[in-house]
Length: 246
Image (cartoon, rainbow, N blue to C red):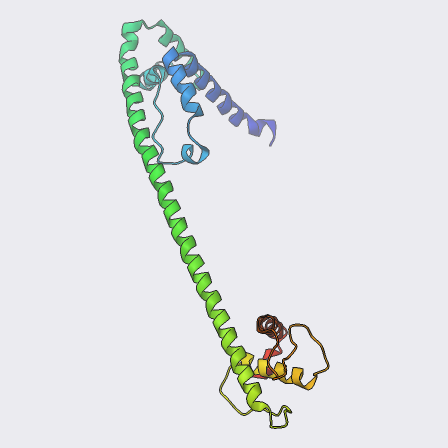
């Protein structure tokens, strides 16, 4: 941006600084302490909420709200910052009786703010508790669903392996030589298990750990065999070779 383009925003910034400093300078000691405490309270998530109660105004700000329009009407040539300076000067000229109505407004406003903040904090805590309950419930539900899927997959793998072993056992002739299995409505993975067993049986001299067979032709390590089948079948699916077992 060019200096001329930045000028309006710089002017607004300067006016805001003047207004803030004027209000701060005209606060009582009690109001200044409350302002300091309020600036340190709250987290980023709660201070930016749209439903957060409006902060209490100081007695000077109540005075400004009540009298600014008349000052602007009387001196329309004054800039925003000059209006703030003029009101600060007039506020300092007021005695205690002149300030009393605005001090009472500030006290009532501070009580309103404190009561509203009690309700607001209770609302925030209740929402946080609800979020914890919902999150915990969702996590529990997801964990149960994941465990159910895992158990179902394990059961299906076990059944496919057993069916494949049964098919392989039925495919063996009296002489112990593998022959083609008979037709049976069974899963593709079970047929893959049967085909794997046939290859192992036909290559008895080939030693593959976890795929070694016992004397009766069954896997020596059923757990390792299950892992091998699961991994090998996944690889077959990824490479598009599983279709041949349909």
